[in-house]
Length: 430
Image 1 (cartoon, rainbow, N blue to C red):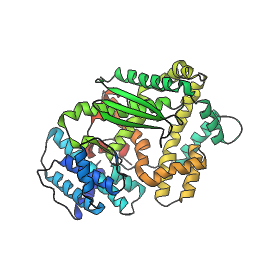
Image 2: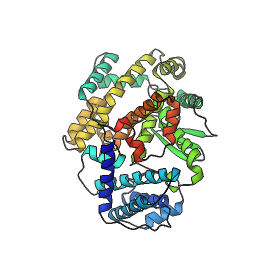
Image 3: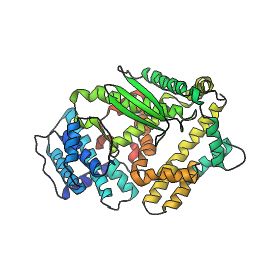
Image 4: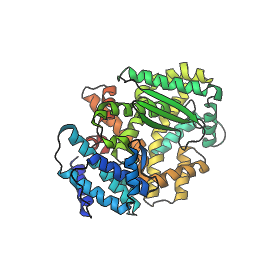
């Protein structure tokens, strides 16, 4: 932890060592941060912000400023200097620490945009506040062998996986009802442990979506989950429903509004793609299915409820669980380690696509398209695998001190994402 704190001070020093644009003390620091984030999103053609639901006039002001990336960096350093001098206590101090972490992430992303050569690990630390560990190819190969045993037969393993996924497809006439039933069950299980306000979650099925699912918070405890009907099946539906809905992204959005909405902080109207908050958000989403459906309970629910409702052989429940277990072992290497080697220049794009095809059991054409995500968002890939490790370690530490998993999960979901929060997890230690 001491090494991490020293490094944080070095990062702040580096951030403040360049030109600094002074920030008037009359301006709310959260509003100024949001304006800079909106300006950066505009300057990078929509490559920085995932969601913004704040006042239109603030977006208009940011976009009309026509600030260059370097000017945004200068003003971000000025806001960081202002926050370092500003006195605050209690929840306002936590807020300032969260804003500082977001500004450091912004400056780290600007370094990447400006062509600074950072290693994969250093870039992840500057932007997301963590140093992702190395993942072992031998463990990934062992997981591949497990999948081979789970999907016997002729043809390549990728073709056998494709055939399995085809068997898991939910007939179109049943899909809407099965998806809604899964979301309802996720909410029911969550409500047993975490009090929910009068919330609502809309579910949409669409044909065109870059990912398997997406969550959008609509305000006032309302949200929307959009699911790609071409990619969802009986083997991944509970994961999507938990990750995007309960107790994942929707629950976190609702709890954050319930806890902090009274402060009317502008930064809560904004969700960027870059910063430590993404580690916590995606980590909670990844861990959500494990929390709501421990393995034995998931197998029972699949066998007794979801698979029969979908018209799929209930005996497949055990195989779904075993394949998921193998994939969780395989995923860190497939998503993080291959991206690390590529971004660090150890392998070229063609080699990276070949490796990703082998370790995701997808066609080369599919993985080439998937790799566009790495080209665009680079170290964001750590938010899923490492984020889940971060959340699991934080929750296990809390359980060791007497909390339940659900209590620890709820606290983490509503925590302001400060450097101290990131440093206090064993997940970030090498």
